[in-house]
Amino acid sequence: MYNRVRDIVLLGSTGSIGTQTLDICKAQDIKPVALCANCNTRLLEQQAREFSPKAVCVGDDRYYSDIKQRLSDTDIKVLSGVEGLCEIAAIPCDMVVNAVVGMIGLRPTLKAIESGNRVALANKETLVTGGEIVTALAKEKQLPIIPIDSEHSAIFQSLMGNRGNAIEKILLTASGGPFYGYTREQLKTVTKTQALNHPNWTMGNKITIDSATMMNKGLELIEAVWLFDVPPEKIEILIHRQSILHSAVEFEDGAIIGQMGVPDMHIPIAFALSYPGRFTSDKKKLSLSEIGTLTFGKPDYDTFVCLSAAKKAIKQGGTACTVLNSANETAVGLFLQDKIPFYKIGELVISALSDVEHNIKPTLDNILDTEKATREYILSRI
Ligand code: MG
Image 1 (cartoon, rainbow, N blue to C red):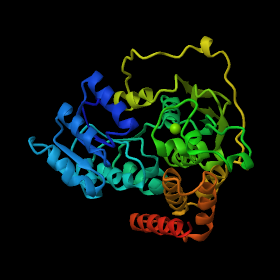
Image 2 (cartoon, rainbow, N blue to C red):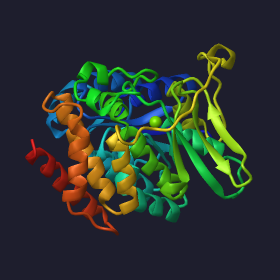
Image 3 (tube, rainbow, N blue to C red):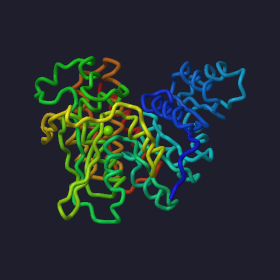
């Protein structure tokens, strides 16, 4: 049994999950011993002054001198790049919360586990690209990986007290995003503003676009395969527009156990920090009588091609998921910079999956090489 978390290393402190994690740290008297942002040095400085961590890091090396200058009157250690991220992930602490965006999160996750730190994971790409090596290392070190993604937190919570009974099926819920019910034709003319307007959740830009293409659910399917050691055929994606049932597990006797709550990331973040206990919360709680109706349906795999691509990638295994993820990450970046239209994201992902070489039993180097090759492939196609 674990004790309550007293101190954390927070990777991705200026993003949506990061700032909410710091709210919880303040409320629960948890000390962030190190903070890391990608490039938002103004907010990182503010956080560093408020929480006085031992070290801060910027993921993007170009912002090193800026943050160094901003904190020059303090004795906070300043680091940068993936090396810096890995260094702070290894600081002994009760938990490393990894909430960075993108594949840059993989090496720090491995470093944290290698160093014997428990990891709470909001960085999907870590498991999508490195699922096999990350889960093997965590097993070897006998450390749990605690999911922060709301669906996986729900599955994790649904499995508490399960005592090893086999999982018949995982029910992975999806809101359907802002373009639910659209045809492929309609997706050709959607704008960035529409894509960034999620009906239920407030999140960072990358994940909001992934929700609009439904790639987010595809990445979550892959994440669930690794976290819960179930084959992809045993995961059913359910469209649930209200985002109240955050996911569920069906057992062999037909019983389904799920977790419900308001769609607010504070709940899964706080749970990761309080596990196996729970913190009290003064936030608005779920009123099922106010909600009235919960609906469930099947996803449209023909229109949301990213979802079908993710299913294909996890069946292929190995670095196919890295190709999928890297192609998507690059294409979403291009869409956010107005360089490609929305529907092109799916097209580029599909062509990368068939054209970029991938292998079956990857090492960390294979994964990083595949990531780079895929990024170059996508950039060469526009
Ligand atoms: Mg999610």
